[in-house]
Image 1: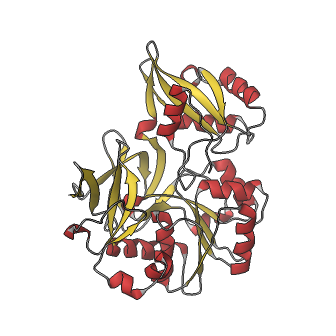
Image 2: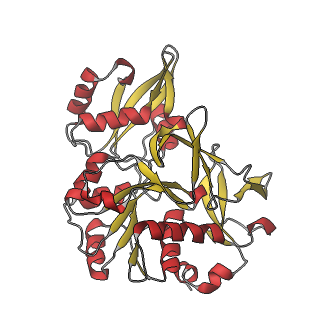
Image 3: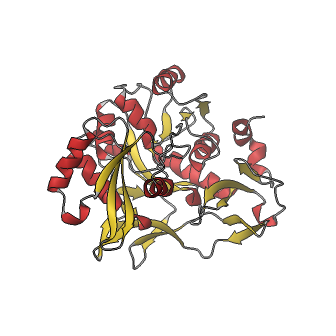
Length: 378
């Protein structure tokens, strides 16, 4: 039985056993706290692996909430284009199970043309994609199949140029915000917005979630779909650490208003330059906007490096394939506010990315600082 078959079975959801999504090195520890749970791997602040513990009850509740939000019913057909080892892929399977609807899995290596043909053949109605996948479909100029009702884009911020280009091609894209610790989606745009121009904010908070911001403006969450705890390795042994409180503080800065959420960037995207805080993700968005679409989303990253005089300097890193990168860089430098200006630019053959195409910023910073820019397969 495959993992997908297992998740789609009634036995799985009633089984008190623990399921690990991904590769566990060594023997699975006998931890009573993980009974009736699913474990997803992630990395802690130190870079050491840890496992997020999600109860099957929390995962099922999240699936039902998302289905209701997106109008999923027994006639719908979910398309699975994300790995099951990630909560985004698992969530798609859980939603199909909760709705008692069909699910089709796209097999093989990602290829936008093959995927597009598969969508039409299977008459998929609902999808979850990451921004990189949507970017590839838009870049290929592929028009959305008529069967599609909603494409939720998560796993990273969807820039407005790509989102609008997708809408222009008929893709019913909805920006979303979520995380492993929340069983996937926390906030997602409504279906009624599909006839309007695309905007990446605000996002409506899904039913069942309570939100707040800390004094530092960091998003906090409370809800029944929060993770139970984590499993970490300490001194060669695995240990369960329960969630510390009802509220979970994320690493995302946000603004809340009338049941909506607007993301302002990651906490660790802020660096000091000459005593002032600068948001490197905001600088990246400024680059994209200034280029008027000439820089594809995800093809530029701003890397801060320590500097004895300025505290930090900014390095603009382009991924190979951006036409006229030097000219675009010079134009940005001429008009950008002083603190947003970069010390220099460099170009890499490929950015280090996760299996879902998310930029690995820590690795990229290490590469820039050491001068080691390895070739990577995506």
